[in-house]
Image 1 (tube, rainbow, N blue to C red):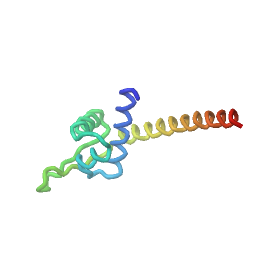
Image 2 (tube, rainbow, N blue to C red; image 1 turned 60 degrees about the horizontal axis):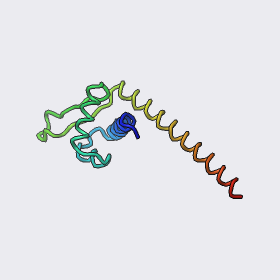
Image 3 (tube, one colour; image 1 turned 180 degrees about the vertical axis):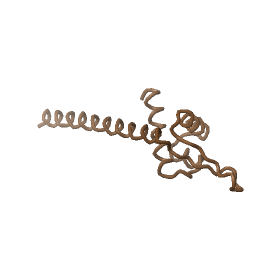
Length: 109
């Protein structure tokens, strides 16, 4: 997998996870994604800089580490586009595998 595709996949997975649980901690999110906390922090800042998420700190909360990650409209569009691309790619892989299996089946009859 090339670096751009891997980065897009990381961004897509991060957006999916924070969309389903905006108050997830970075530590738990990094664990679920199988990446380091430092890499996640870098990715979150990049997503924020691209305008895909907003990071909100609950200033009234005595625990200053509580954040919420909110998808912006731009982030929702990007996530949708990436989901479409991901599904399209998986469908192509499925069709290619199906053709290969049918070919092998006919060959081994």
